Length: 455
Image (tube, rainbow, N blue to C red; front, side, top):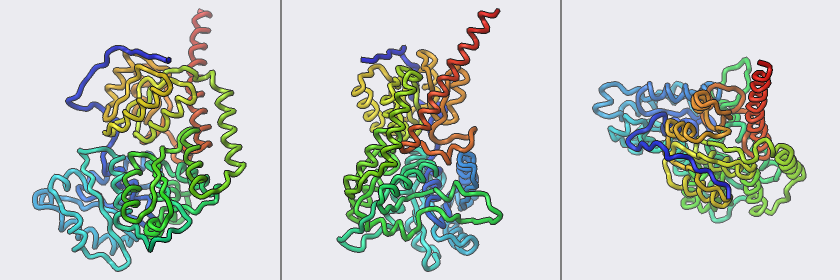
């Protein structure tokens, strides 16, 4: 059995220092952008909306548009009902979206605005829609907000036309990049199955540069598609934190069977995704996908000595980290520290079960953790590699640890939203990044040794 026994960690439970997450409204805003012709609306102050737009824009390198109820002191005291009604009227009159997706902020949640009744009494043009989700920033994380907005899409829009279901499936892709959503769609197209994917930010936050401004890009799941999701045979919910709740609501409301799966990050999770489609619809797996899988296996064999037995620390969003940890174990690495900022004991249960099955003991696994604690762990018992969001670079720099950027947000690198980490192609990219990070360190150490010998 592989064993890693670090020293006693520094415990702090009264507060968080640099938590590995951000707030619910950001996740709700990102999910809303995955609806075609949708304008996300932040029911609160302008500052909250500006921060969430800025953070998403920095990660995706594409402009993120959203409106705000623009709370003032009066709304903060007496409530924001008038602000929201005026906002709905003005947004449809000026910007003419197909749908508005309203999410709350700390301020409107603390006041206790009754959004369902406010929306019912608002002036909504015929043929347009308004959906909402409550996203208090002081609870959960951006993944919680993303999940809530997905549930709102189902609750407000999805309908079942009868007992007979169409030969099609729904895919809830989770909080992933547009490049990942494109890869999921490519795999399903190769399998020859009709799919409705929502939310879908491909074609919204990865648009090409043209000479024409288009406020609502061509991408995104249409309102009609989300309505028709209630007529599908099955829903594949990718990621327990981001997608499972919406799949459960869709099953209860419309009778669409929900199948929970991990994000298809890594060879096993991708196998499970493809086999779920194959088993349900009875399709044949094309030779092109078999070839891609074989290339991953061949690459793992060719490069195993780069990372076999290396100690690794992983942090990020729970669905990403759970799937990535499974892949790291398949690669022969030893996840010593595994952490997410999102609350929920399911994370610790799943990770610990995987580690136990692999015969690894002594690892530290924590939900609702923070990067200060992770840095203390690594400082006390070092690792060979750190994997996580851009905020991990400060730990990597301080402790001189090789670092692979993965997840959300990545603010100091470009192109990543276009490059998938899901599917077999994603496996190859992850292997390349991990191998190169470790080889760069080895080469640097060799250069340092040569320099000492010369001296």
